Image 1 (cartoon, rainbow, N blue to C red):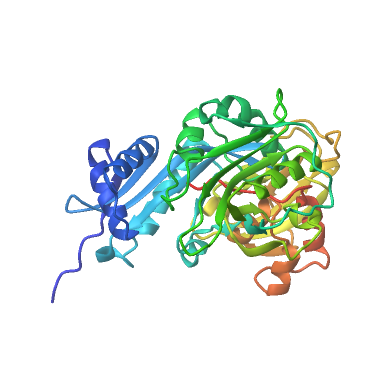
Image 2: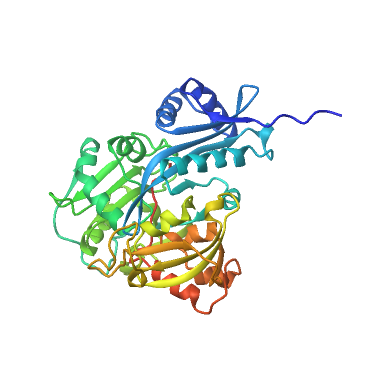
Length: 430
């Protein structure tokens, strides 16, 4: 009888093994990396924490984590942005990914990162590891063969094109303002702007132009759009405008930017692949046949590595006192029954600051403590993650049968406390 193979050894991937890491990722994701791709991904992996699974000194598993600051309701929290998660096909279903995830959770605890997040290439996998789909995106298309008809008059101020080198300094404050309104957005430094937001070539379509940036307002920037274009083909198909990002502070500026994008010569379609689920464009379109939502899909998958730290760090729209029975088999500290108290119901010192509310009415006080009281809601940690940023409603999960409501009205009350003025939005892939 043959001897079962030894379990792979989990350890840090040194910089000398980055070539092996890229070879593994290329194998798993069916990609062919040219010299430029490999150098770009090497730069990325150097900035990451890297966990590897080794079998006889061969790298058979990889998990890399970027050090992110992710916006949450009322602020931001350290977050491990997982990427390059891969297991060699020869070592699947042998506990390799589970072992690397367990190592990641230990690292998050040691470094004070209560959140982890990723973009899922196979969404069926990550629910088992406690991740929930915490933000959703819409793809919006505009028929721009005719002038864009809007119900809101565009801002009459001038627009100007901006050189990409100027983007971080000028666009950064506008992006940060959007992070304060919408949870789920990572902070950006200059390197992130250059390599993640504004690379010269589009990673998925080398026929698209370099990034173009149009700006409304001077100082401060009132809004901007980042886009690429592709000309028409020999069969008469019109060119396309691919909108990567659009941020603005008022409806008239929003209208001005979309009107500009829909009026670019030699194009007949505007496509924005990833817009917030509550994007206002479909509402301000005068003709809904001209502006269509063509797809809706999960974006950021979130993991509450430290549930207590995550819940007590965010703001709350309503006071609530409920007992949550949370199931988390991977992280014992999260597993059990806890009383969540938010807002004016709280007394005593708080981990997130003084009691009371901000001027906009959101509560900053909260407690989350073990209890033996009966549970009001029973839920998996993945479902709590899906609701945490304000995207998924608990009542929907109760109706779906994946969350159990033991006290009538408990889901409605927690939904009211979790409510945010804007839905969370994650556009930056990593």
